[in-house]
Image (cartoon, rainbow, N blue to C red; front, side):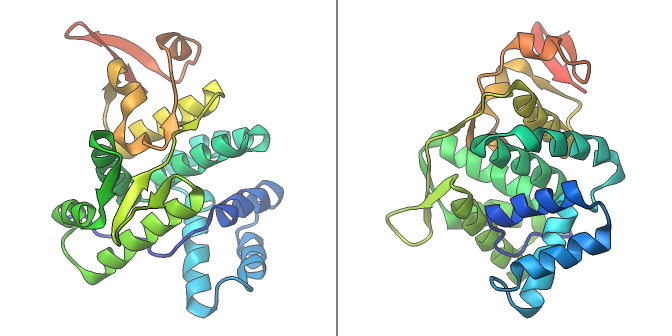
Length: 235
């Protein structure tokens, strides 16, 4: 059973983007927190603001030491990224920062790849199997889904507790596409990924990637091998 949830507040896209903007300008941890506190003071009150800032800081500032290199690459890519690419970059960092986010997107993506909508109850049931049933988890699941609605990758369905897929966001920048795949491999802990799965990963359901095999040949980060007649991608 997994333990730390962490992502238990609605986090708006402009807050995530502002965090990157601040951190790109000012690397001092305390100053980043102060700037975020000032930025959020009219939108989020009291303890909610503190917890929201903690989520933002954990996503971009206090990252796991093994993720510093990919975080720094994401910061550079963010500077020239378009709106869709910025969502993809944020998605990559959230996969790395929060196992609960990785699990939730895997469950939601699997359901959406079977049909274009899902019920909250179905997602909760599967997440409870992984994390255990607890009230804090129910609250966190709701907040993560509401966050994704704010980011424009999900929409409310016709009935309460029903959510629908939105047209996938096209990602054109090859480096951003590969960032998503690298983040997926790191977050999942898988040693490799079959190439045939690259463009249909459940965890990356909001994005249209169209990654070709040649895209991996030009990047030293990835290793290509053959297993059982299939091309596999590893780090």
